[in-house]
Length: 122
Image (tube, rainbow, N blue to C red):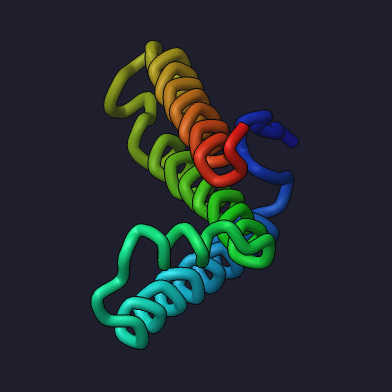
């Protein structure tokens, strides 16, 4: 059996569950923010600062960042394995797929760290 070291797990079912659970977390975050916007018309910077200075909101936002990263990785890995094939790129497909996955992984890591710095003020 050949295993791919760039997928999130060794199981397609696990990747499917990560995709679904992360989508639920992302949807809950968006719905919460929409509800907050609707319930508080005329928000000021102080209102936003008050919301995001609470630990429960920071933790919820951190969970959302983790979910976004996992969701994006599973999606980009799936795209790379489905479309960056030897039929499209010949013998260079493995290199092209690796470079694409490395660029996606690096971008997601940088954006995650940046998000944590913004959220927690590091």
